[in-house]
Image 1 (tube, helix red, strand yellow):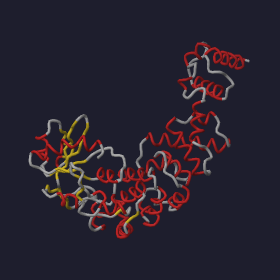
Image 2 (tube, rainbow, N blue to C red; image 1 turned 135 degrees about the vertical axis):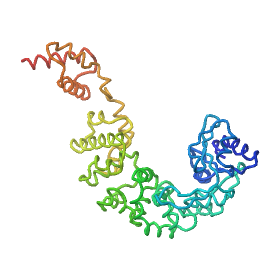
Image 3 (cartoon, helix red, strand yellow; image 1 turned 120 degrees about the horizontal axis):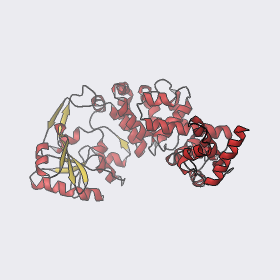
Image 4 (cartoon, helix red, strand yellow; image 1 turned 90 degrees about the vertical axis):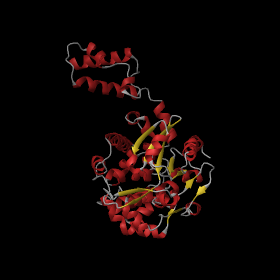
Length: 402
């Protein structure tokens, strides 16, 4: 049993001591059976949420109206949720009505897929009323009960199905696949931020090529931002993207390069992505364009990349140019040998330059001069020490007065 489960067993035992049922549920149980890493644990209990708050010293009522209480135990947080059933999903996300129940099987019956509808007791015994273990063994994504109903309740589950295909390498059960094909249009009713979370996980999944095939075969891409305006995007992805993206920024840059009329700014607006994603995507784009222009990995190209963008850049070139054009190891080695990795590493700054030209007022010329110094240092024309840089500035000054 994963150590995280063992840390949470006292929570189960405390609930049981007071006469309630308590089980580990959901994705953590699935990942335990698949021997995958586990980052968080969810607990389901027959105890009402108000009782959970009373029974534990440190709690946070994060979603108490829906039965969820955060229990703090040994510096970790565990979600404890009362068994419940749900009905009515007018907004295609939140149930209109939540009823707390005493039956674990009823609680498991509201979940999306059979592989997520299992529970585990403190001894490691599995409760599996919907045959999730069988579907794990056959590598199958299958909804709990009728697929059409599950997807009409929350259409995002269709994207979650494809995300699990990408992460686990599973196949869609036929009726589940047919329901996605029939109800894919409902994705247009889902907040794009929710779609983006699932799309990012799909893009970063180990079996991305398989997920792209399902995107095509189910036609679900027709209801996703950007893809709905250029159907070739998903076909190009299926053809060229054989291994997972390293980051969301890399995926956005790649999609832009598949169709340059859709700018990175446009992608980020359509998918409501953060400014940080936009910034990293633009850096990757500039580096790739410079690499294509010069046909070599110049120091100034590496210099403009942040360290976290080295792996995405290497992978991006592999997708767009060919296998192993630039290996990540070579890229890292060349980056490590750069004389400077940021402007802060330069042995001279704006104040130093002003002292060498006291007759000049501060202005944009300082930044231009620093850019020139960065280039000289990167290409080895001038060494990165203060004396040599100052002498170069003096020579430049004499030439300007010339």
